[in-house]
Image (cartoon, rainbow, N blue to C red; front, side, top):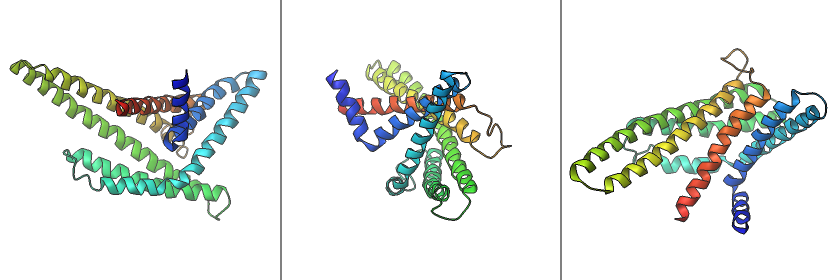
Length: 242
């Protein structure tokens, strides 16, 4: 019990951990609130309250992202043009993802400032532009993960054949590690596609299913993606502690 409490505290003390918790609560509240708001009576009132709570958490995350630009710059500089990346397709996809992510933040900042009436511009086009950049990053991220999965599967098959031919057991260990990596990339694909569905929903009306998702479906997609992110964060922390 004490260890569980300390783990929760450690997650909340880190910026990334706290953001993932807020994100999960935000979409979870939207999911439950969207379901309840379709009903009548006290359930409907609770649903509306949860939707308002979700909106406030979303606004909180937007404000906190005002300070993410420099960390994104540092990450982009550390990756550079991906000279250490062996696969050229993965490398240039990663570079484009970094560019899209880097441009996303100032666009969102301008949209936020316009809504807050700090600057006198219309926020609609800036929200749309930030949504396009986010969707582009998600799409490229899903494609990059699919590319990595293909390469890992070929590597796993090669390890099996080599291990069977040489009669070695270390090939089994390597194959298990590759399967773990593949699972991680599959989760990345699922998470990216869930978020991408929401990104398209927030695009201007007339583009695919833009504006057609009910609150509960937006919450469901976001909660699914958020839980995957929480799972991956916990898994990476466990691996780091081993």
